[in-house]
Image (cartoon, rainbow, N blue to C red; front, side):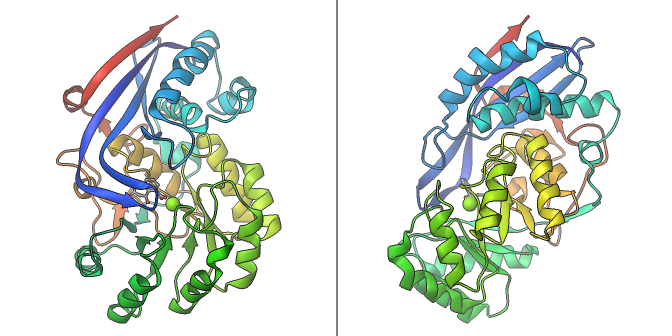
Length: 370
Ligand code: OSB
Ligand code: MG
């Protein structure tokens, strides 16, 4: 395939509700949309998941624009490729890090590739599921009562797993009160690296609440302390921030740093790498689920497609568009019914970007040609 044009759009969309994690509060989502266009004028789309601030990881919207404009897009425009795997395996492999930047261009090429084959992205990736189970990520609220109300709303909507964000001072008491009201719901906690091994007492206290897992309790760049912690806990540790590649997954599993992995396509540098981690974990019976980055529907569409691979056995963070946005930028919007998404079977990522809505939320755009 030959890409003749790439368009980057800097988007800004207001979140319906602020979302607070241990690293900060998001009121809106600033992100880059990537569109790649082939010689026949067919477009492939993807969402870049970097945030404006380097708090979840070291990348930002600006560093991603720089990487795309100055390094990655020129490579794509100057090379003809037969298959999207060649980007990660060959053309981008000499560029270190910058996973989210690489992923966004690669994912847009995957969407285009699927459209060129007249196939859904899910089927092209080797997906086998027609429906996927969906959980919800609930941010830090002003009170435990407010959290309980949110859980009740999501429970009535049918969500299949409840992830509560925790941080020092918003942890054991929260989980204790939630468990008293809901002794049996599939519950987990995500710390986004807010603790250290000095917090061992609190972390072992969480072990008494039958949590499905504790996500990324320790440092974003650590797999040693996580291994020590996992040895002390019966609750599985799930790694998010620490896993950027198949190599990271192999090492973390070898050390016993986690028993579950959250795959975010952006964090691991794209769909090719996500598939490799999937296959490796499938052979070892390590369960996976697909994380979210408060994406618009375009990012969600790719998340839904990768979740159709068989070893994504746990519900992911691909909640309905309506929980985040007054309106989404794809048609149809992502809808979750009784905790399930029916996977689209149409070409490419399965949802159509709405150019009209995209225009409404575009702050700046730039086109790159050979
Ligand atoms: O750690 O999974 C995370 C959002 C932004 C950054 C990191 C994370 C999250 C979420 C939200 O948990 C998941 C979603 O609903 O998209
Ligand atoms: Mg997380």
